[in-house]
Amino acid sequence: MMILPASVRRFALAFVAPVFVALAMGASPALAAPALWVIKDKDSTIYLFGTIHVLKPQTQWRTPKIAQAFEAADDLVMEIEQPENPADTQALMLKYGIDRTAPLSSKLTPETYAKLQAAGQGMGFPPQALDVMRPWLAALTVSLTPLMKAGYDPESGVEKLLSAQAKAAGKPISAFETMEQQVRFFADMTPAQETQLLESTLDEVDDGPAKIDSLVAAWAAGDEGELEHEMIDEMRRDYPELYKLLLLDRNRDWADQLKTKLAGSGVSFVAVGAGHLTGPDSLQAQLKALGIKAERVE
Image (tube, rainbow, N blue to C red; front, top):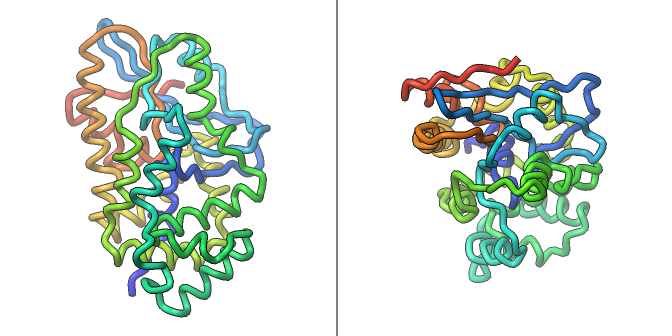
């Protein structure tokens, strides 16, 4: 059976920030310099910033150029809408992530189920808590837990901080997608894809924080080549359908939305998962196909 690669899991976890925040920052680099991009016309400026969804509280990422761009912006555009009520998120999980008619034990091989139970017990989950989950939700749950135990805090994630700062400054906040749209990217996987996601997650769950550290180090350094290697290359080569679903189609849609926004006026700050701003099919590449040039802010 083919197993979904670590790159697919890393990318998947990267883009569902409000529900399964799972990118983590390891040791803070001395001179962090995440990449910032900009598109312009005669009366519009739109900054593009790739985000990390969970950080340690002490992590410093807000460089002067990022701060200046954000402060100049009239509004903030997020990858997805930020729920005001936690009950809304819970309702989506119950709708798409819970299956009370067919427990996980009936969907997995005995070996995989035993691995899941062992992982769950090590993380403090009672057996029944995981058994009602669909495989995709169980996979993301056991991926996130070791990171949280290692001290990574979703409240310190980039989106959380930017959203709070935008509200405090009275900046309007909009989004490319709804939370339900993002959850459906997982919920609409085939049963085989779901199972593969869980199996590969269980095989590497103990290595999660260390592997994410290397990805985030590349993000913090603004290293586009390493980000592409960590997040894009393997998925694009070996899993083209998932790559198209998770990245290419969405980047094309967002580029169309940005073209419309650019036709207006003012300054905007756009914050999306870092994987969308790297690789040959990046958001910048889709904008270029529409005749819009994105330049890196140096």
